[in-house]
Length: 461
Ligand code: BES
Ligand code: ZN
Image 1 (cartoon, protein in one colour):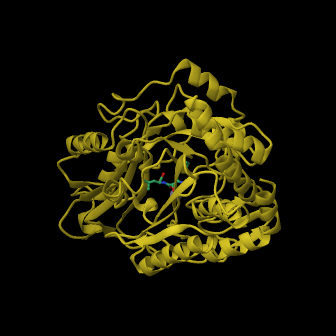
Image 2 (cartoon, protein in one colour):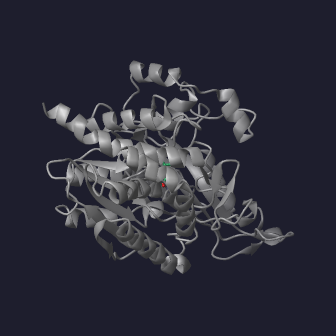
C-alpha cells in the first residue's frame, strides 16, 4: 500500500499532464462534426489503458460512438469490479463565457478547468491512475477489474444496452463502480444512492402553412409561438405541480426517515439561491429543495425557438415554433409510460388553431441503489481514508440510465462513488474539478480496491 501511495505522490504532475491531453480531444458526442474526435478519444484511452498494464484492451465500434473495454483478471478468488465511465462530453457553447479555452485545460485556484474535467474524463482518469499505481508498483491489483468506457452517455447511451446484452459473459462482475456524480460540496465527500430518470420530449407546433406578415395577418390566426407558450405555461399549476394527469401516480413517497436524513444535511436555501443569483427559489410546494431535486419528479423546458431571433426587428407571424421538454423521474415512474402521458395530455389540450407533433427523443429509468452492500461499505471506508472525513449519504437529481440496465442485464448493483461537486459547472462554461478531489479521488480509488475483497470476504463468513 505504502509504495502504491508513494508512486501516486511522486507522479502527481505527470498525472495532471496526461489528463490534460485527454481533455484536449473535443469528444462532443452530440456534434456529428466531432465524430472523428470522439473516436480519437476512444483510441487515446485504449492506448493509455494498455500502457498502464490493462489487458484485452479493445475499441468496439457501435452504430454510434465506440465503447472501450479493457481488463485485468489475475486476482484469483477475489471479487470482480466492473468500472464504468464515459469519455464523451457536452458541447462547449456559449464559448465566449469560458475564462480559458474549454479544450486547453488550465489550473486556477486549485481547480482544473476544462470541458470533461468533472463529467466525466477527469473521474475516469482518477481510477486509471490508481490502477496504474498498483500495476506499476505491486504488479497486481487487489481485485479483478473490467473497464467499460462509453462515448454516448451525454446523448442517451443508445448503443450501450445492446452491447451489455451481447457481451453479458465478458462483463460478468460482482458490482459496478461508477464515478460520475458530485460530492455534497467541496471537500464534503458523499455516497450517492439515488438518481432520477428522464423522458426527453420535443413539441413542434405548426400554425399557418407559411410565415406571414404580422401586420396583414396578426389577429387572424393563432401565432404558434403564443400557442406553444400557452401549452407550456399550463404544464405547471400554481403550486408548482405538473398538471399532466397521472404524472404522480407511480411516485414512491418519501419516507419520514429519509426526509429526516435530508434535513440533517448541511444545506442552506439562502446560500443556494444567492449562489444561483435568484431572489427566491421555485418549485413544488410542500417539499424542501433537496427533496424537490432528488426525490420529486419535475418538468423543464430546455429550449424554445421559432420565428425571428436575429438582430434588429422583423415583423413576422411565423408558421412554426418548437420546444424541448424533459421530465426528471423518480422511482417508480417509468420513462416510456411518462412519455405517453405527456403526449396524450398535449394532444388533449392543443387548441384547434394549431397542430402539434410530439416526439419522444430518449429516456432512462430512475435508480435507487442499496446503501448497505459490501461495495458501498468499501466506498465509505475508502472515502474516510482518502479524504479524512466520513461521507454523507445523498441522492442526486441527474440521470445515469445505465445503472438500471446493469442491474437488469447483469444482475449487479452500482456503487456511485463520484468525485465532482455541485457547483462544478458540468454541461456549462468553466467546468472544473478541484485538484483536492482529483488527488483525493485517486487515493480513495486505491483504498476502495484494497478494502473491497476484505469486506466481501467478511460478508461471506
Ligand atoms: N454526470 C451526469 C449525471 C449526473 C448529473 C449525476 C448530476 C448526478 C448529478 C451525466 O453525465 C449526465 O449528464 N447525464 C445526463 C443523462 C441523460 C443524457 C440521459 C443527464 O442527467 O442529463
Ligand atoms: Zn453529463
